[in-house]
Amino acid sequence: KNQVEQSPQSLIILEGKNCTLQCNYTVSPFSNLRWYKQDTGRGPVSLTIMTFSENTKSNGRYTATLDADTKQSSLHITASQLSDSASYICVVRLSGGYQKVTFGTGTKLQVIP
Amino acid sequence: EPEVTQTPSHQVTQMGQEVILRCVPISNHLYFYWYRQILGQKVEFLVSFYNNEISEKSEIFDDQFSVERPDGSNFTLKIRSTKLEDSAMYFCASSSTGTDYNEQFFGPGTRLTVL
Image (cartoon, rainbow over all chains, first blue to last red):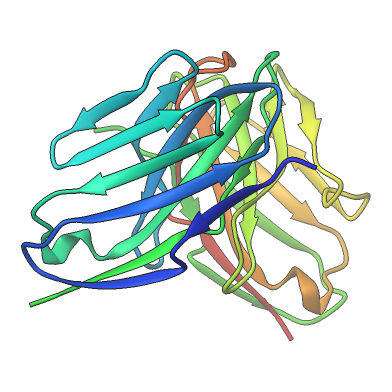
């Protein structure tokens, strides 16, 4: 069964600190993986997309990694800001032109002053 | 910057009633989607729509659900006879292409409460 699991479920960090969020997936055949940020009461917004051949990709203070062999991805947030408080969701796409995507369980991040 | 909009932001209905959730996708997008998120749970795919027909649907999307693009701008999700378990946040999304790498842009959601 195609599944996407994330850890930790929730995280509290001090403003200015770094953190790393994890995503493990069993989706196959794999096409790509996106990390989304979802503010409370809002729709998810894409941060970055990782394809099979990419190991790391940065978007400002966000850096995503992908290990397609172990089927793991991480999202590293550098120098956290209060506005980073949100849920971060890992979303995996099947290859073959399927529109359906599989969402992870999400990590709820809270950045405190 | 163009964005997906949804109305209403919150809908309260009685069990057994029909509801229609409305979405206006980004204007030049061709692929449309509905997702739902039950409180405290992950987002789940419901259906994708292209060229005026359903291209994929999940097992959640049963006969109680239907989608329509009644005109050139709106995309609607109808639930014929709501159940308590239909209470959730419903997100509409759109994308310009249907490739594996297309980015889906999400609306702010409609919170549906079934009493």
